[in-house]
Length: 192
Length: 192
DNA sequence: GTAGAATCGGAATCGTGATTCCGCTTGAAG
DNA sequence: CTTCAAGCGGAATCACGATTCCGATTCTAC
Image 1 (tube, each protein chain N blue to C red):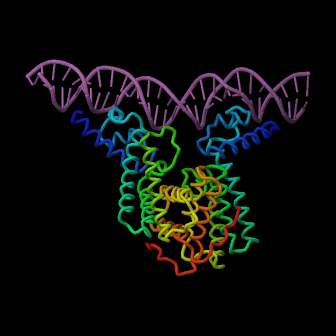
Image 2: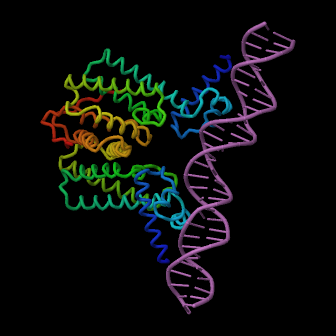
Image 3: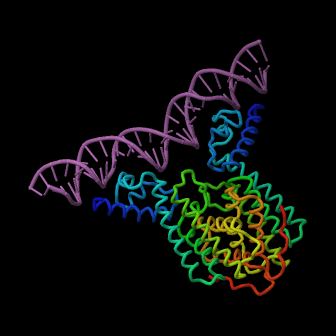
């Protein structure tokens, strides 16, 4: 690859990371090109479609989360590892838009890589959850489905950017309290 | 108003309720017109823009919720009223798309009516929350901001339609457990 | 029954933003 | 220092869906 091409690819990725992080999928290609100091044509030379570019960015972001998960699985205490990871994901969503979808959406054209990452993410989360449960830090009567729903909701709310950091922290703390084993038997839940 | 016009307006509203409930703002005007058995022009005769139509539908839906809130404020026990209302909103979001935004979004062109409804909703929720707290059913160390964030997240997750009813119910139950006063001293909450 | 205003239907228009195209530039091989 | 294929910029093209327009249809009043 020609050296200037490589340089441009890097610039495009950086700009896309920034713009997509701010605006999510709503970002425009022109804007990304402009911020990269490059023509739209160049963006398209490196990434066939907006979705492909988007996928590249999200994939990198998810990889970081997966590394974090691996670290936690390796060294952290099972009592806190699950909560730490959960909070990490929510914080990531708060700082950068458009991660949420990658977490679970049944996007139309899922690439093999994405499917794979999704599976890895799910595995890591399941493992951390089960360890936490075995360690007595997480209530035993819930499964991955509930966790995914809660994580999704928390990430989406965080992503809106309507709530300040402290408020989000307290909201997540409430969630975590609900996830701990109750000292007393759980109250019945009002049905709708 | 001419009788056929009134009839059409009704048909449009019904179709819009259905289509917007299924697809949210992504719904197309053609689709709404088609399902109403009417031309697009007719839809526009009754509602100036897609947003106006959308607003009319959401407004009606919110009104129902406000009535429910009034009922709860009037008769229900304060220990359960708050939770019942919270669950009711989430259930509504699960069955019909696009309510969430109306809950809090800072939409660009908010009509007076919507602002008013939003205020009413906020008041009702605040009242139910405070009653619950005074009755000792809701932990006292959280405020409306946290509740709104949690409600938003729950509604958004419910709206995706990715989770079955029972899973959602259990996830909401976890949330509710987190919102109850802890028997043991509360874990430290991340402060500002 | 008829006139005339109110409505209707849906093709044509517009706006927005992704994607393509192509003449011009530039890196690097010989 | 040439050569020329890879790469570039950004105007032109396309797609898609909201909104407008206007001739053709009803309703309703008389």
